[in-house]
Image (spheres, helix red, strand yellow):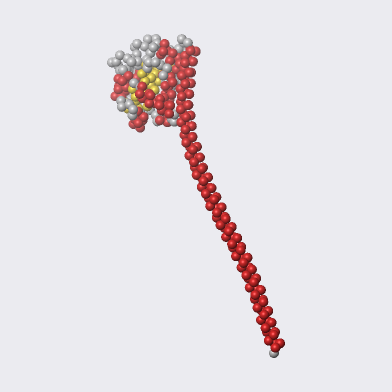
Length: 289
């Protein structure tokens, strides 16, 4: 009996030891899992902190990039305005230097141009200088109409021969602005200059006496572009011109400084043409310009 009780007690103790060993093993596993979980939580917090730092850094870089982009855009606009101004001013100076040097080279010769010796029969002299490509057919049609009023009209054409002759449409063509400039200065002639663009001023600014007819027939992109200097010249021309015309209503805003600007759609607009002739004193009953 005693032996059986002893064996039963030993079995219970053995089972208890076994269970305690299992429990201790489970405690070890649980401890390791808790430590691993703690480690992973710490790693998670570290990565979250790094993510916050990286996000803040990225946001700073994005703001910096935006600031740089805005800066470069401002600088590009400044450079564009500056280059436009320099381009116009340099072009103006180069053109004038070219005309003056060419006049010295031609001497007393007018480049073979057949210009009338006696200009008394004409009501006036009207010249369309280089750059009239802006006006196109409009300018040639206006010159043709003005020639009918008894004016000597000269139209620049780079492909014309050196001896401009009378065309069927009534005006003459020429291709040597320096020779024409010399002829005007030598004979002390004060012509009417049909200006359709600020670039032409380099030529007619060399004439001490002239009447400027500023004909606005293009958008600001063609008239002066991005150049502040060219835009300033536009307003100078508005102030100096004897007469200002515009070809369509949309260009009226460019000549608002001139309350007396005339709407002149085409050479067929007879009332407006008569108004222009009157302002320039080139009508049939006037004494000339």
